[in-house]
Image (cartoon, rainbow, N blue to C red; front, side, top):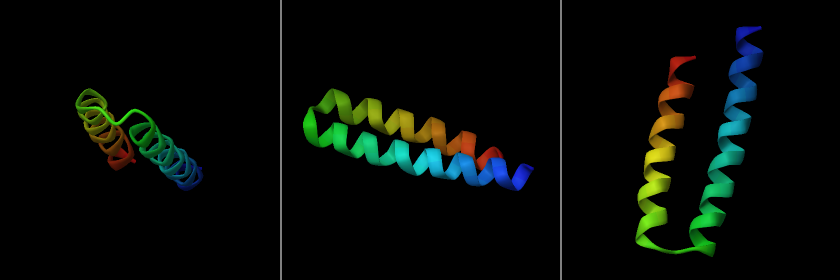
Length: 50
């Protein structure tokens, strides 16, 4: 079950990264890049806990 959760999290994480990258391209501002880096850092910590 933990393995399934890990796979689901990784899938969601990859999907999120793709959406964020798209969002950066759409709104290419300094502010969005700062927000993106913080979001990626937070999600990396969450995923690394599993």
